[in-house]
Length: 303
Ligand SMILES: Cc1ncc(COP(=O)(O)O)c(C=O)c1O
Image (cartoon, rainbow, N blue to C red; front, side):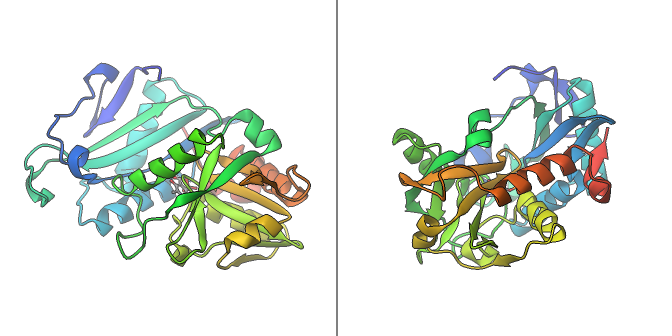
């Protein structure tokens, strides 16, 4: 990873090499952090951050679920993101805000530890590859179950991501591009770092949040975009067998954007090529993020 100039830490921009934490950081031992992933796009009218306030609201909601009191408001975090991207002279980039318990205690109760907040911005291309965006990726149904909603609040916290890391490692080791995780009850939940959409006979489906998937901001954006485009989207539980009978499948996420899936466990999906609704979702998402659709301009925060 290439260093950038500066990183925002607890209210100020510090040089990249100085953005450090102690080895007794509570979050390092117990995963007591919450985070976000955001993208900024270089558009004709300048650099625009996609749904910045919604991401910062979700960060504070995630913190609340873990009784973590972040001392910054959404407005202050929005300004901090602007300052970070501007100071690093970035155009299209990925932005990673994180709040975590640092030094102060080694017991499980983090209340004696200092809560730190940082924002890092850096260039990052297509998460699942340009080729994946174009022709689709190959996914594996993981042997690991999605961590259950009975085990953690459905928030974007660092600790539970070990579940995604395991599934992703397994898929890559076996030659696939990404993992899909099932709930312990056997419903399809989501990708290791993406939400899932399935199309069958023209109907667009996505698993409900009760199947343990993250309330993805891209998921919600794509649902709005496709609905406004005349499609009906149904939130309904999906079984692994439904995947193999799908006409189209795609994944959504800030990092992955809208990525077609061309194979699940070596079975081709539909024709084996991205289908028309997937292509439409990609086009609408890219136009909305690119500032080309007037009706979604309020999703963009120009620097
Ligand atoms: C497990 C998981 N699901 C879904 C998503 C997609 O969420 P979003 O669209 O808000 O980036 C992510 C990305 O952060 C994720 O890590």
